[in-house]
Length: 255
Image (cartoon, rainbow, N blue to C red; front, top):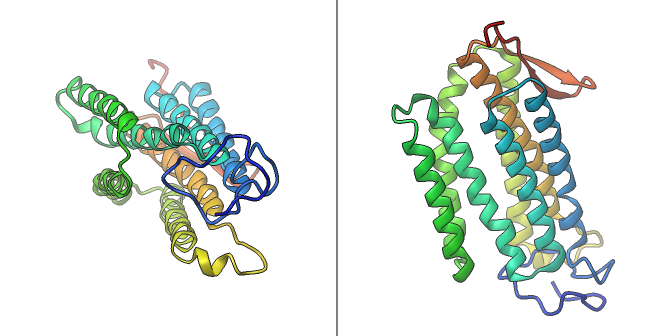
């Protein structure tokens, strides 16, 4: 949206702007609420990372949690500056992250262990190089949605084969958060002109960040539970401060 006070970062060069007045609170932060709304994503990913390291989960989960933090930090840089380079620091980690999810979802049944990670790594590297030179626009969104859709069948398979009620509840929260978050994102994009005339802007894109932070946390927690079941680690869902679910495992002494 139109600028408020003067800009430290110069003219907007990103291809996307959200329904928030630019530089309304600081000359250093273009979209204030869209920037700070990434903080929950960093904190939740950090909690997941500490849990994974403390219980010695497979390294794939530590990398996944770190990628969640990188994505949130990249999003902060993008919304704080609205520069094209920083936009790439948001969009490229989005693709890398979903490729990690694909690996975690499909690798247990993949017979050729080195083939999948090699392909996904090369795919992610090639995308980063191409994305550095080309502005995809709507093409990026279509590409990202396709990658997300490829994860759904496997996620559903894990859900129907999970008998633990608490774990299933986490999966349901995963679905609920992405649905509500998507509604917030859609309204912010489509009804911006109308929303900007309201006395108070609900900050739909910032709400999208918050809901997707919990969405990623629920996805990671559910996948950690499913993987622990596959490894025979007797996983149980516990609650941090009685609210935030996490996975507690009991590895056999041989492991």
